Every structure is written in C-alpha cells, then in structure tokens.
Image 1 (cartoon, rainbow, N blue to C red):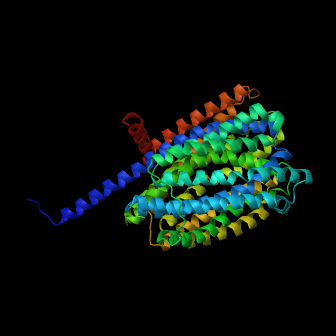
Image 2 (cartoon, rainbow, N blue to C red):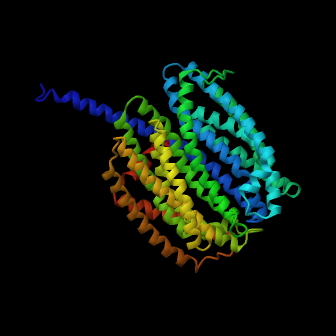
Image 3 (tube, one colour):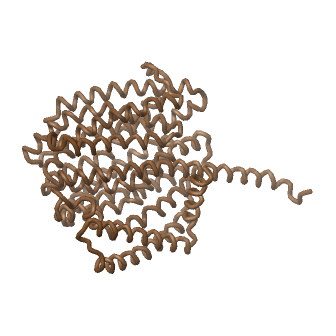
Amino acid sequence: MFLFPELFPSIFRRFILGLKIVSTNLKIAKAALILIVASTCGHILSLGKEILVANYFGITKVMDAFYAAITVPNLINSVLLSTFGAVFIPIFIRYKLKDKSEANHISSVITNYLFIFFIFASLFLYIFAPWIIRFGFHGLKPETINLAIKMLRIVCFTLILSGLIGIMAGILNAFEHFAWPAFSQMFITISTILFILFFVKQLNIFTLIYGLLVGLILQFLFLIPITRGKGYHHYFDFNRKHPAIKEMISLGFIFFIAIIASQLNIVVDRIMASYLAPGSIAALGYAGKLVQVPLVIFSSSIAIVVFPFFSSQVAENKIEELKDSVTKSIRMSGFIFIPLTVILVILAKPVIKLLFERGMFDSHATYLTSVILICYSFQFFFYTVGMILGRVFLALQDMITLLKITIVGVIMNIILNFVFIKAINPPAAGIALSTSGIYLITMFLLFAFLKKKMIYLDEKYILKGLVKIGLSSIIMGLGIFWIFNIFQKFINLGSILGQMFFLLIVVFIWLAIYIKVSSSLKLSEVSKIKELIYVKFWKG
C-alpha cells in the first residue's frame, strides 16, 4: 500500500516526539503564565509599599540601617532555601514517581534538620549581632550601626518562619503547584503597608521589621493546609542513612558553597556602598527592588516553572525535549526583556519621580536612584538566560560547574566594583553596572560549559530571533524617545496625575509599536503569547 513502509515507524516516532515537546512546552507556558499573574499582583502591592517607605524614610540613615540589618538574615535564608530547592526537587520528583509516601519521608527528614538549623542560626545572629554589623558595615556612622544592631536582633527570628515557608513552597513546586506560594507573598506586603499606615509614628523604621514578622506568620498559616491538601504528610523522622538523604547532602554541600559565593555579591555590594556617600545603600535598595519587579514577575517565574519540567525530562532521558524547551525559553526571555531594558533606560527618571519623589525622597534621591536603575536594567536578559541555563545544570545535578562559574563571578564582581566605582559618577551606579556585567560574563560561561556536556542548543534559531527582537526594540526605542520629547511640551509633569498620564500613554505606545514591528518581522513569540492567552483564559 505504501511505497516506503520502512520510513513510517521513524516518521511516526518523530511526530509523537514533536507532540510531546509541544505539550510540555505548553504546560511550562501555562504554569509560567499563572505565576506571572500572581507575581504581577504581588508586585503592584509591593510598589505601593515602596512608595510609602520612600515617603516616610527616603534614602536616610535609618534606611541604610534597615538594609544592613536584613542583609545577613536574607543571605542565610537565600543560601539554605536555594540549596534546598536545587537539590531537593529533582530527587523528590524521582522518588515521587515511584512511591509518594517514601518521597514524603525524605522531605520530612530534610525539613526537620533545616528547622533545627534555622533555630540555631537565629540565636547565633541575636548573640553576635554587634560584631556582625560593626565588622560587615564598618563604613556606616556609629548611630546607624547601633540602630542596625537593634533591628538585626529582631529580624533574625524571621529566619525560622521564612525557612519553613520556603520549604513548603519548594514542596508545592515539586508537585507542579505554583500559584499559591506566589500569591501568599502578598501577606508580607499587606502587613507592612498596614503597619506603616497605623504605627509609623510610634515605631518609626521598626514598622518595616514588625510588618515583615506578622506577614510571615500569616503566610506560614496560609500555606500549611494547602501543602497538606496536595498530599504531603510530615513525619518527625531523622533518618540520615536513606540513600536519597546521602545524595542530597553530597550534592547540597557543593551547591551550598556555590550559592554562598553567589550571594556574597550582594553582601560585597552593600559593604562597598557603606563607604560611599550616605544614602548609597538605600538608593541601591530602592533601585534594586524596582529591578526585581520584572525579574521576579518574569525571570523567576520562568525559572521556578521550568525546573520541575527540566528535572522530569532529565529523569526520563528526554534530552531532545529538554533542548527544545531551553531554546524556546531563551527566545521568549529575549522577547520580554530586551525591549523592557530599552524602555527603562528612557523612562527611569520619570518612573522614579512618579513613584518616590515626595516627603523625605527629594530630587537628589530621584537622580541617584534613576541612574542606578538604568545601570541595573542592563542585566535583565543576561540574568534570565543565566537562570534558565543554571536550572539545566541543576536538573543534570552538575553542581561543580555551577560552583566554578559562581566563583569566577564573585572575583569579577569585586574587580568590576572597584573599576566602575572610580569610573562612573555617581559611584553607587558603578556597583549596579558591575552587577549587570557579572550576569553577562556568567551567561556566556554557562553556554560554554553546556556545550561541554554535549547539549547543543539551536543557536541559529536563538540568534535569528534575538536579531529580530533587537531590531524591533531599536525601532520602538527611537519612536518612544521621539514621543517622550514631544509629550513633555504639552503635559504638565509637575503634577502626579500628569506624570501618571504621561507614562501610561508612553507605555501604551511602546507596546503597540513593539508588537506591530515584531509581528511584521514574523516573530513566532507574538503568536505564541496570543495562543497561550486564548487557551488559558478563553478556552480554560
């Protein structure tokens, strides 16, 4: 009946593989969309909180003290939970496919030991707070150091709650449940806003600390029934001899060192900023939080979602499917972040002015923070691609490569900080530019090491897409710059309503130009986003 019957089994297998790849990529995209929506809602609230914080505290010494106080607890929390997520999820998924009860026992053992560690870490920070602040932030004024010590002795106990919350979020992500962990973060924001509105006169800067503490308690209580509802049962088991526990400890030790090294970049930046003009740490904090809005909404959402899928693809040896997922994720990242970088460079100052310039936040603070924001924004695409490629190495359980790249990044960060602080005015912007430079370097290193693993991505497809995206972004940027200069003559930018109206018009035109040019250049990402929105919201 068929002229070449021997070809059909091969063609059929390729067809089925193609369907599976499309199905997996659609699942990744749908999960990412849910997380993006949740993160967007959370960050709209978070921006409201930052506006209140800027109004009451500006870039004053008390904000420098606040950022100094939360640096070390955030470092410990990030290091341990990043290690937990990176090592736990692939192993948990592997065991969950075989025996759900055994997977729960494994996660219980890890959780029990981490809980004990968080208690001891909190006590350590409480006892040694004076030495930690005086040694780590020697450049601060004595009164700022004393205030930071008082705050650290309160905020150190948030480690226990945030640690347990992070563990529950990791377990839910391993069950491919992403929405509620993301939405639950709004408890912290809402709690902080309420504390500022009702208690700022009585508590001053400590409203931020107590708002964080109460928000964490609410988030913890919210996630407990959801985690249990997904089939997780906790056991008070301390069996370290299970093969999975030994594997986690072995892999975790290497990744633990790698993540400490990566988080040292933040600590080094703040320590070096403490020797600059007063308010530099606070300005870096405000700009950093604004940069985190798109990074958390898009980059972290993509990274959180792809990791369980990458882990499953590796566990089932679906390498072709893995390469296709990584390639398309990189192109989608470029489609989102390259134009976003262009628009933020143009609109950094008006955005900062609209959001923060009132109360204690003056025009000098606007200038300093906007320049830092521009320098931070160059990292968007490099950071996101690095996150995606890093998840591939984690799925492959290759911690050594990540450790090597991270150590190179830390060394280069210190060198570039010294170079850019001297070369750029204001010097604090040099620290931000150094951060962007580090993500560029580590991105290329990750690409190079991935090739050594014999995983070759479709570079031609990626490059072709990035060229079109770059062209669309340049055309869009030129159009926005021209419109920006014309509209300033006709709209009263002295009022908040005028600034808001102006930015809304510019952003609307930006989207219209970018989508139109991208469609004209036949960028497949445009149709994919339209299809995804249609499938998710219209067809359910």
